[in-house]
Length: 537
Image (tube, rainbow, N blue to C red; front, top):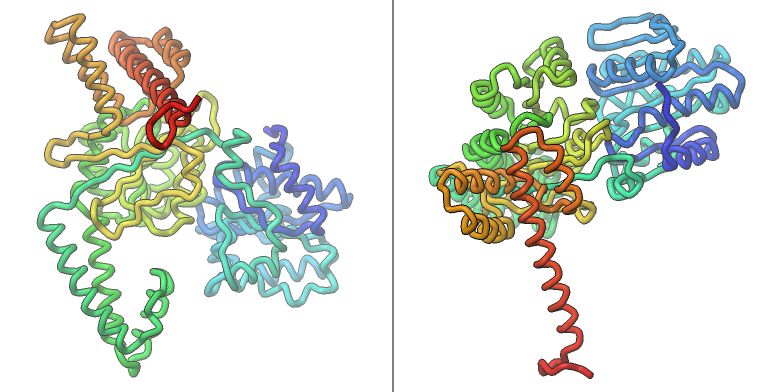
C-alpha cells in the first residue's frame, strides 16, 4: 500500500529528474530508499508516457526476495508473472518487465540484456541497491554496457542506493554510470524529520580474562618488534593510518622478492590473531546473555556477531533460557533455514535473532527495537547498517536501543557513530565474575532512591523489590523519560511488578530534574562570579 512521500524523498526525486534521471541516493538504512526508487519508476512512466523496463541489482538473495515483496506491495495491480528473479536458484525468463538480479547472476548477463533492450527502443531503468558492492572485482561487469549506449542515453535511467558511498576511484566509477550523488540523507536529518525512530546507544565495557590478556599483550609486543623491523626497510609506512598500513603490507607481502615480505605477512597474521583474541573474549557472550536476561523478550532483539562459532555458542545459551524463542541467521545455516528463522522472527514466533555479517544489509524487520553488537567492527558501513536494522519506524515503536560491547584496554575501536550527538549515549561496565552491570551516574541516583524509599518501609520483601526495579532500570533509558510519560506508564502498567518498576523510574527522574536545576543554578552563579570568586554587580 502506498503512502505519501517524506519531504526528503520529494526533494530527491526533483533532483533526480533534473539530473536526467540519474543519480546516487545516500540515505540512512530504514529511511525509505526502496519506496523512493519505485516512486521514481512510476513517475518516469507517467512523464514519458511509455513503459519502463526495470532492472534491479542486489547483493543477496534475501534482498532479492525483499524487493519482490516491495514491488507487489507498491504496484498493487502487478501480477507475479511481471516480476522476474535471477539468482539464488531462481531463473525467471529475462524478458519480464521487472527483473531482480542477485549480483552473482547479473555479472554475465545484465549488461547484454540492457544493451539489447535499449537497441529495441525500450526505456531501461537500472536500480543498483547497496551500490557500494559493485565497484570491485567481477561485480564491475554489470556495467559493461555503459561504453556502448551513447546513442541510447535518452532511454537509459539509473539510481544507486546506499547508506554509505565509497570514496576515491570507487566512487568515481559508480557516478560515471549511475550519476552524481543527488542526496545525502544521514541519521541526524532523518531523526529531525522523524523518518526513523529515536535511539539510545549503550557502550558496555567488558574485560579480558587473565589468559586472554596475556595472549593479547604478547601478540602486541611481537607486532611492535616486527613493525620496527618493517619501518627500517620501508620508511614510507610511517604515519599511515590503519587502512593504508595494511594495504601497503599486503603489497609488500605479495612480492616474495621484496625486503620484509615475510615480516609483513607475519605482522598481518599476528594482527588477525590479536583481533580474534579480542573479538572472541569469553566475557562477550556472558555479557550478552545477562543483558538479554535483564531486558526480557517483550521487545524483539537482534544480536550481531562477527564469528559464527561465537554466535552458535550464544544461541545455545539463550535457547536453554528462552526455549523456542531464539533464532540464528548466518552463512552456514543454508538459505532455507535462514529464511525460516527470519520469518519466525518477523512474525514474532521467536523474539531473539542471533546473526552474523550476512544480516548487515537488507533485512527488514521494522518492529525490532533492540540491537546488541556482540563484537565490534572497524568498518563504518557495517556500523551504520546495523543501527539501521533497529531504527526503522513501526506502529507502536517509540525508541530503539543499541548495545555496543567493547573490550577494555585493547586496540578495539570504541567510537560507534560520527552522528552520536543525535542520540543519548550511556557508558556501562560489565563484571563477568558477578554477571552484573555498572553505571556510575545511574548507580549514584539509584542509591539515593533506595535509601529514601527504604526509610519509609523497612520490610525486607519491599526492599528487595525496590532493589530489583532499580537494577532492572540500569540498562535502560527509562529514567531519562519525561515525568509525564512515566506517569502514563504507571497508569498503563498491567502488573504490580511493572507498576513498581515505573514508580522507581519516576523517583529517579525527579532526582535528575533536581540535579539539573542545581547544575543550572551553579552555572548561572559561576557566570556572575569574577575570577577571584566574588560576585559581579
